[in-house]
Length: 246
Image (cartoon, rainbow, N blue to C red):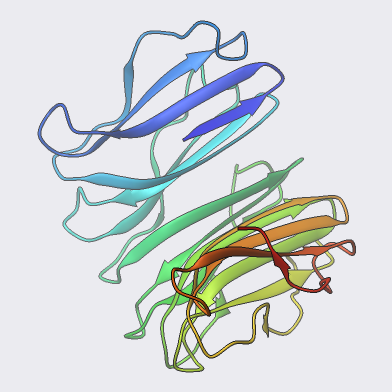
């Protein structure tokens, strides 16, 4: 994956050259024309995987699934120098539960980190919020709890608008659902299906800029599945009709 801001690019990936999965990084200060030498940003005895990365100005955040203690925990590192140096590893969640699929949203001093958490026997959507650029985080909050699995979360933040999108199984098949916040993730609207169909929708991808939001997904109502999407011009609180993109 690559994050880009003000001509600085940070490329990060799972690297298996030592036999297990570590997280490697290279950095560019001229938009990708030249790159720094390879370095390990995260090294462990067991696999480090599923990284999520954001970069805004001089602030970068990396979150990933960390297995160094035998469980699947959620860890993160912060940089305030656009990836030149990084703060020490911090565990956002540690315990017997399985944490997976981290996602990060950053705007100004507000950071949202979301993930799938199975401490209640199924995968629910949890998140933590920071208002001091990741210096500290509020306690864990469940954004979605249901008797069925919720997976593949995507969180985005722009100004006062925040958006969480995920794959929801409560109807019996995989649907794309969302929640919108108009106060930067303090409170959230009711969970709503972005797609209402009796077939599977998977692999949601979203972005948010001001009041404009765009979400796409792989839609299984035809075979083979096709790419579909919806747009919002009110920050994700309501959506325009379905579009075929494939």
